Image (cartoon, rainbow, N blue to C red; front, top):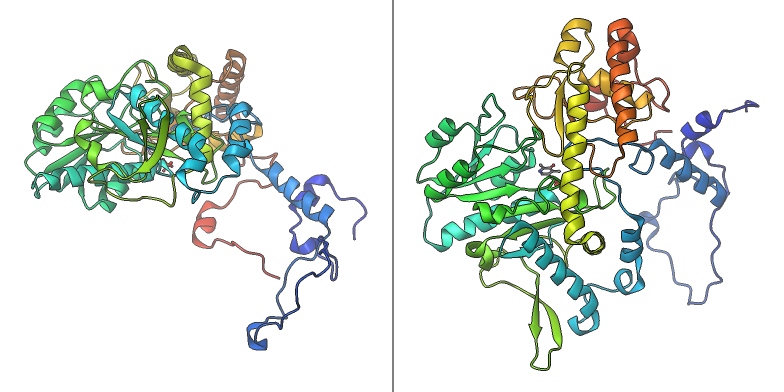
Length: 494
Ligand SMILES: *Cc1c(COP(=O)(O)O)cnc(C)c1O
């Protein structure tokens, strides 16, 4: 054993290497039930290698692991299209209330009226916010609500005996889940080009619509961070061709309280409650996707949806129900209930005024970054953005060989989480950096980020290797991404 180990070294020590034979971290209570025989000896393994550690050792192990992670509670996290906004702790407190966290999804409706009331109100609030006719909050992710939406589009066409509608149009700037959801719902996807201005290419759209058109999936603002100036024309063309207009509102930060997609002719809109309506997320969860629909899709909503009945004496009764032509159940039970409580608490805390203030602040923050970084990075679409801005590192790459990835890796050394990179895809924007500051960041934080981005651009010019080898100050330095993808080492080997 070496005498001095830095905390950084200790942190990297695997749990198995901390193990000592016979050490235990738990205490069993005395046996108070009859002893029974162990199963058949053939089923027992005595060579099972498990770490044997004390309680303090395991607590340290997990606490140290947690410090390898980065979260919005650590620092600025401008991951475009992911809306890593600050999550008020009050919402966690609400979700943790015993009346919400200690109930069981199989309890009879009469015993969980408070929980059902929350779901019903959330459905109503989201319906109102998007100007739609109804909502369901059972999907557990954005992608799952997209699937719900596309299944509803299919059910709608089939219910009218319109069996030839198999084609779904999706712009090439869309999030990858859009085409995936459409295909899982049984459609055939055709990708639409984005014009030079960043909007939907109207001529291409006109050519693509026809009697086989089932629908169009449009993200607003698009993943280029801009509001499609052709939007009304797009909606009109799709509706006239008999298609369903789908709105991907995973990130509604720029539209809240300002634009109701329902009033513009959208039939389905989904929103990621874990992005727009706060929820600590990342690393794959926990998510919740709400799906809002127009009048003509109302009968097809997934189950369970919550309904309210008011008795003559004014008492309200909430219950789970299945809409008449429902596309069915998407996930177990009622959805990710903790996330629903957080979203509800968030909207109620902000109120009408607060909800539209989100849009104003999110848009101002993104445009501030756009104006301050213009000249240092390329702006593929130099026009007002909404809640996020796309920069390109193409000129820096051409001049110094430092690409978007190098800039992102160097940002880590400055304690800032990298933005989304290489999305939008290279065929839409080369060397893209998709930056979403969110409305919850102060001008001081944005100024710090701007300073760092400018410093990195200068470093690229003067010492490009500093970027190529970054990050320098992290537990793991630059990974070999090709090896990591081809030969992942996912478990401990003795
Ligand atoms: C995040 C996102 C999705 C997918 O949401 P998940 O919850 O990750 O399934 C879809 N569309 C857009 C625009 C997104 O940003």
